[in-house]
Image (tube, rainbow, N blue to C red; front, side, top):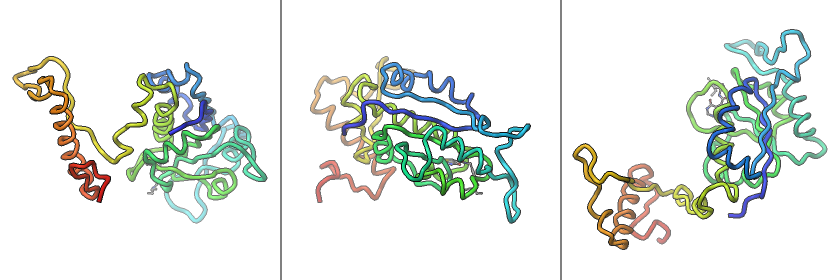
Length: 241
Ligand code: 9D3
């Protein structure tokens, strides 16, 4: 799939320091060096005006925890993305447990964007008016509880970076990623041929490429069947029927 030549990502967070080493690391670092992705991280507290740089407050109606205040959040998004109305080019994504669950297809869609703004939720949530005024969509990375949107934002960035042209060593490998087909891969081995009395399957060392292909397809089918029994990927790869 064709993906935009370069993507700009702005992250809004109260923990900007969490992103430093991550953005320098392997895949994302290479993507940035090649100019495929440009990431800027912004401290939400820069848009506070009180002495204590307050970004949260107690929820109306009571209840546990705190809620992210609307003023700093909306002003931060407007500063990096522009106002939602009447028009803006950036796509503003709030990482939140209520969001649409991320999958490979959603990553491919996000990777098409020219300018992505990732807003990291924290505390129990975000004032609903800030979501309405400043956010285009909400994304979750899965149904389990984290402490905020920072790690999910990194998941998005890494997933997007490796889809950008010229980022992977092998430009075709992102396209043939097995997850796109809903398939998993079989077991993988490297040297030595025997490790602590455990041998690499004979067929992989046989030099018979057709036999290797058949074996791998069968192993992959078994794993996919284990993980996704509904997918019905038969010996024909799960496309027909
Ligand atoms: C008890 C109700 N919880 C909502 C389902 C409260 C709550 C849990 C976790 C409120 C905020 C959070 C912080 N998590 C995120 O901001 C978050 C998240 C996650 O927890 N899991 C998966 N994806 C994401 S994206 C952002």
